[in-house]
Length: 93
Image 1 (cartoon, helix red, strand yellow):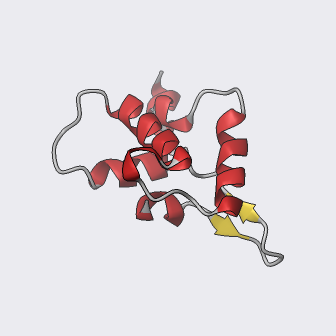
Image 2 (cartoon, helix red, strand yellow; image 1 turned 90 degrees about the horizontal axis):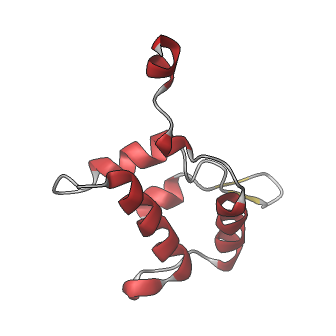
Image 3 (cartoon, one colour; image 1 turned 180 degrees about the horizontal axis):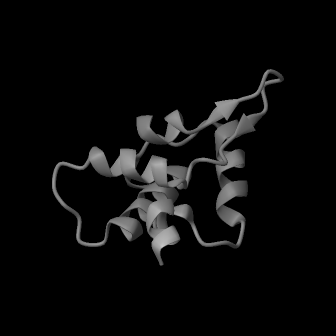
C-alpha cells in the first residue's frame, strides 16, 4: 500500500491524481518490495492493485477520494505502462 500511495498525489486544491498508479516506475518499485521472484509479475501487480482497491484479503483500502481517482485511472481502456517495454527497448524495436 505504501508503494501505491507514493504514486498518488494531490494538487494545491486537494484534487487527487492517481495517473501514475499503473506506471512502470510504480510497478518496478512494487516489484522491488517482493521477497521472492514472481512467476507472472505483471499479472500479480494488477491483481494486487485491484485487490487493494476493493479491500479484499484484509488489505487496507484506499481512502474514498483515492479510490475514486484510482478507479477512474483503471477504467481507461488502454495498455498499462507495465505491459509496455521500457522506452530504451521501444526505440531499438
